[in-house]
Image (cartoon, rainbow, N blue to C red; front, side, top):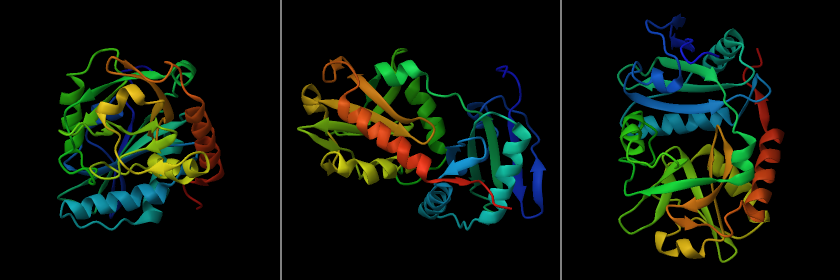
Amino acid sequence: MNAQTPIITAILTPSGLDSTSYQATSLNDAVRYEPSGVYTVGRTFHRDRVLELDAHLDRTEQSAQLIGMPLRFDRPAIRAALRRLIDQAGYAESRFRLTVPRHHPDQVYFAIEPLNPVPPEVRANGVSVQTLPAQRRNPRAKDNQWMADRVALKARMSPDAYEGLLTSPEGDLLEGTSSNFYAILDGALFTARNGVLEGISRRIVIAVAPDILPVHETAPNRADLPRFQEAFLTSSSRGVIPIVRIDDQIVGDGQPGPLTRTISGCYDAWAEAHLEPIWNG
C-alpha cells in the first residue's frame, strides 16, 4: 500500500455508518481529524477475527467514566460496522482504532490501516529502548490527549530507540509510550500495576506467566537495571517484543532471553486459542 493511499475511515452514528469528511493515510495521520475523547486500538487475526474485543470496549467505557464522559456501547452495532469496514478495506490483516468523541458519545470514529507485522529480526534480536522522565496525566484513562503528548515525547528520543519507557521521579519503570513493560529480576517477573494503563496484552501475560515464573505486579526500578536478567514489552498490535538494551545498559547477555521466549510462545498460543469472529451476523 502506498504511503499516500487513503485508509478506511468512517463514523458510526445512531442513524448508521457514514463516511468521514476527511481522508487520512494512516492511523497516526487520522489523529489530527478525530475529536477529543477516548479510544482503543486493536488488530485482526486471520483477516476477520479479533482478540478480546469486549475487553477493549470495556476499557474504553471505563476510560470515559474516568474523564466524566457518559458512554455505553451498542456492541452489536460496533461489531457489525467493524466487520463491514474490514471487508471493505480488504487488507490481509488490519490494525484499527475506535475513537468516541467526548461531546458526542453516541458516535464512534473508525480508522483502519493495513497491519505491518513485526519484522522477524525484531523478535529474533530484540530492541533498544530509552527511559523518559514522564508519566501519563491520567494513566488509567485511554484518552486521545495522550496521543498528542506521545508525539512530543517521541521527539526527544534517540533515533535508534524502538520505544520510550515512562519513568517516575523515583525511578520506577512504568510503561512504554504505547506498550506495557516487564523486567525479569532474581528469577521473577516484575511489571507495574499502579500508574499505568492496564493493556489488554498485559492481561494475557499476567494470565500465562505464573506457570513459568513468579509474577510481582510491582514496577521495576531504574537502579536495578544492571541486575535485569531479561526485559520485554507488549502491545495488542505487536504481542511480546524482547528488549536487549535500556539506555546504555545491556540487558542480560544482550540477546532475547529464554524466559521471554517462553512467555512469548505461551502468549501466542493463548491468543490463538481465544480468537473470535468480529461479528457473527
